[in-house]
Image (cartoon, rainbow, N blue to C red):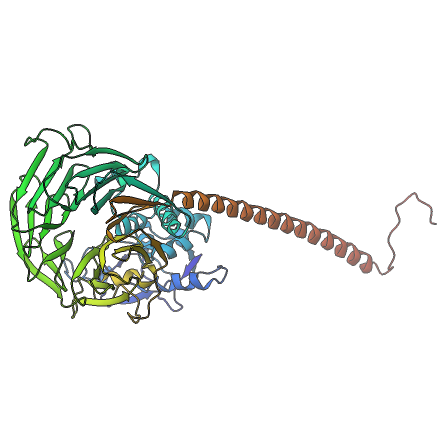
Length: 561
């Protein structure tokens, strides 16, 4: 792989130094990095190189010291630019190489790493893999939750990204259904804490239960809280449940042991608490690092400080609040037929999607980056929106699915799968990858991050799973789907078997590829030896023809026959 300068580029004096401008401002001279030379002609590689845009450079002689237009300038090129001189990308400064690779998405960066061994090292160790992972699945658990730390067990970000992408494909494979029995009545809320293999459930029997999903056992259960539990949320340090009596009941993790909650312990301020702030049933709950969010049929959303347990803000709506999902400093809520997006710092309404559904909008989910919003409603439809746009309108309707015959009670999203649970007893799995625009230039909010498509002409769900009776809630992890319904049984669709099958198939394909490449190398060696033999024969014939006799010279000392 090589880049070349445009013909006619002028030679620059040795005393000058070149700079790459941080923002797009016209300059005095240009160096264009062209297509991949020596490549196999793969069209995708051509697309990759098209994104390696024109880099504009200029001599420092024409710059004013302290000019604000140029921003932070750094010397990136050598003192001379030779016309039509082919250079390898490895000869470029590291900072410039990083800027070039920043123009590529995950698929293109992976293709680039396959071009040569030198590019494999550069592309595989690029920092963009960490960004790709965070955008899709957030920070990994454990020590990686602390910014700035590397990967566990010296695993590269690329390897983690590829492994997670690999896992996401197993939801189309085989599965086992596991059933967790313990609730006496319908299960209204389920929450999967996939990082520690725990699940939390609550329902009409007024009890919150904690399950080990690996063993299929109930680890702990609370005493009766005196009312129907309509919402449950948890992380490794805090568990909260909301009831129809308007309270939020919470448990802190046991001291020194994260994600383990003493649900039957004595009611003390140290490990258990109860918050009162709603005048109606609590219908939805969510947590982030510093706050607790609760929505209620009293048409309000309350924002609590999880350290002091003080009420920070109350966001008023025009109808019952059915669902909410926070992201950074915003929170998306569904109330009546509408979808609201609030700025939680200022308490201001930033986006309002009116009449998102015919009837009530029961469910809402959001992508890890917060840019895509999903809603499900009484009409059995699922809508996908792009939100947070800097152009009007501030939201864009991307797609609509109608996978259910009943109303949709719950949505969950784990890239790339959107999962819905309905009163018709079915679970729909929808892969949204084809709808997303992976072009990194779309990070500027002027560009849409979705592909242009008719919202009513999208592909149907990739898979439908059949439950038993009406389903109230659903959640999804890396290789499991968890749901609860009116029959009181918690069901788990376990796709680990599909993962093992896919791993074996992948290993077999790798062995076949190695054997094919080995045979090809042997054939090339044989062809090379044959070519050398032919060249020697031709040289001998030419030598005989040059002496004019047309006969082979006999060796001395042997009589002629």
